[in-house]
Image (spheres, one colour):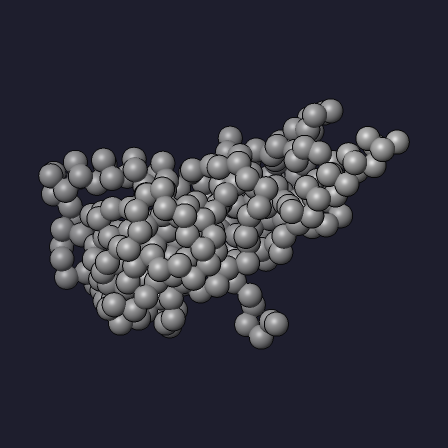
Length: 276
């Protein structure tokens, strides 16, 4: 009986540590689907979606899969695979349609729109580093989901915009742009570990932070970088400053969030306006 009580206490402590404020449920392309998995048990079940591992947290009563939905996702029924110690099963969720607005930008540096051969060699090498950082996974129970804004400024370009550079179509905007003067401090919105830094052709000086269970944040077009790979950061820790490096039209921070290797809207990790 004593051993049983001890086990129940340990399980309760483990579940309490995993309980978290979940991000906003918005099952659209570029959004997040919260899928309830059933009563709490130990260990935490494993979930995959599009062959990528998915974050699983507790809402105090049951496990919840926190699924990042890629911008390329088609509306309709989507499936996740759930595996536990006793069984495996499939759960479904519906992705709703969402139309994003169009944005036309003029880039003065023509090579940032039409790179030459040498530029493309550099871009291909950098793309591998960026892709590796954005799909990074680290197993941990304690994941902070409620973020603070990484910089004080005005949102100048929202997530998901269908973009045209010098009238040429490009991939949808995969982050949120926050306009601020050069040198404005950029801070970590939540605890994490720096996993990559660099000066990239399109993104300029950038930092990537791992927050656990496939949640990675990215900061681009920086003027200065004040952290190194492997460094642990807390909420509010300095990452660097706002700049206009890479492909830009003015000084701003490009803030991106990757969840199970899907780029999702950073707004879903911030408190809604007016919320306490």
